[in-house]
Amino acid sequence: MPGFVSMSEPTPPESSSEPLGDSSARAAPRRPLARHPLLRQWRRNLAFWLGALLVGLVALAFAHLADLASATFRAVVAKSPWWPWLLCPLGFAGLVWLTQGALKNTRGSGIPQVIVALEQRSSRNRNALLSVRIAVGKLAMTLMALLVGASAGREGPTVHIGAALMYSLGRRLGLYDKRTVSGLIIAGGAAGIAAAFNTPLGGVVFAIEELSRTFEQRFSGLVLTAVLLGGMVTLGLMGSYSYFGRLSESMPLGPAWIAVVACGVLGGLLGGLYCRLVLPTQRGPLGFISRWPIRFAAACGLVLALLGLLSGQHVFGTGYAETRSILEGHPVVGDDFLLWKFIANVISFIAGIPGGLFSPSLTVGASLAPWLTPLIPGASLPAVALLGMSAYLAGVTRTPLTATVITVEMSHSPDMLIPILAATLLASGVSARLNPLPIYHALARQMQETLAPTKGS
Image (tube, rainbow, N blue to C red; front, top):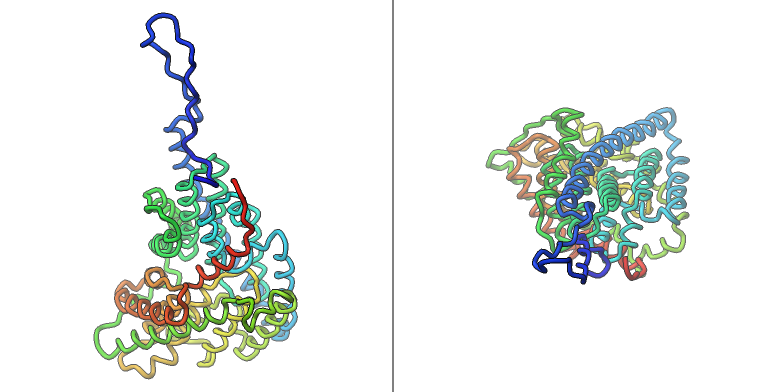
């Protein structure tokens, strides 16, 4: 296939000269040891297994550093509430300036870059999207974004970093054929999700629902094994834990199921609105961003600082503490937090800085619960929060199965599986009415248009 080096290397041609004696005793050509099919198979297995373990370790280290960066920003803000007015605009402008050149592919979530890389026929473009330099840069830039208070997550960047590490390891081991390369990219990205949230099943479903649909390839056992290995690294080093604790919520049939419909509709509407706001167009109201990106980023930083002041300094970072307080039934935020966090997510994304949208989306969705719970008889605040966070995530990403499995795994609430699935399917359908193309694939299409066509590999 053009653009890819086949993994089945040519067999050395036979000699045209006959050996002395019986012609039937012609000596078969000797295959070089490095080209032996068994060794090629072991190289492939080694790339998947070793790569998955590496991704798991990097994802854990990244999670620890991200928490440290967010905690550092909060500690600085605790000294004086005026620090965001300096750190946010200068930090946003600096990050956009740093990503203007060789590190431009570190911008944004990182998942669109992985999708584009899967569709590339040119290894030059794939290398530009998934090089080790980009992986390291993505990690560093995302930490810097959290250090200056961006309302961003680390899960999308972890997908990008995981895919880049697995892809680069495969190239080091001489694996170039299309099927193996695609499998390595998918396995790396999905292993990153599994390790980031300690949700191995969520990583598998994410790989199938979001990544593997971008090319024609049956999902292989090697890819599944790699994803599970990435999740097992977290399990082995951190123990059996749930990201949001063991809530074990349930929702029996009855009036409480009104929350399923309410969260599904509202999550879909808000998720679709978010997508409409963050998808840039050259002729739209945000078309000027491409002309003054650094100034625009600084302006976004100022708006974020204002939102921080209005929200009591709660809109910064991933929103983990705020989400967990709602899930535990003791919110530390007011009813207006839903609006401020939603705007903060939009501002942080359109600024063009590195950072994901998974965790902040969960926070926005969970913030629906304080509004809805008093209106629905028999509904508990944590259960409605789980419905809201999964529904809003599905409305943004249009991946209802991923949102369902990740939410159930993160909260250890298997009894909520059916109501959560119903809410995410409804939210995804509502969001599709506002945006025909899912956000990651819309961003990937825009990114694809900016790549110069190249020939060869």
